[in-house]
Length: 184
Ligand code: 5GP
Image 1 (cartoon, rainbow, N blue to C red):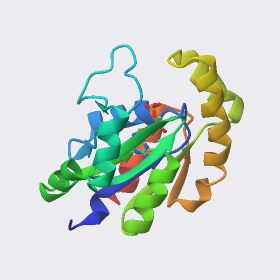
Image 2: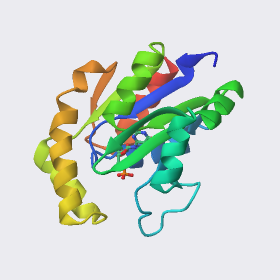
Image 3: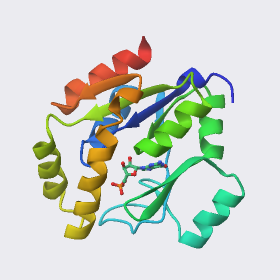
């Protein structure tokens, strides 16, 4: 893959608002394309195959790992998540800037493999706010919420390993800041 400056990683804890910020970025800049990940987690209400994720069973996911079909993959809160290699290659070869919205372990893998990629870590205004956002989203059961909050502490302790740390106070403003960083 050439031109890996065009590989952008957006990471940060669950509930920080990565998905909302990504939507805003995609609406503002048509040269940026989101990589659709594969996951073994169950679809949430309203989520669509191939739009939000490729929803796979564990067997299929593990087969893809064995066949080296992921650019990176990680286990998160009891499920597997991974970035399919083929679509990222295709987008980059077509001149698009590819955005990966992924958790921290995957982000670290990409940073190690492709040091020229750009990595951004999104932080919540504070931990209480993070918990409030995860709970208000209403998409997870209590057990899953606890796993995500526990994991969030670990993830936030690694924020300084990435190129930029941004606090997500306001979606529109965060998206604008990220686009500026990508373009500069
Ligand atoms: P969710 O279940 O809330 O959609 O995602 C859980 C976490 O997995 C989020 O932090 C999300 O960014 C991350 N994630 C989504 N896709 C991928 C992927 O392809 N690879 C990795 N490593 N993490 C991902």
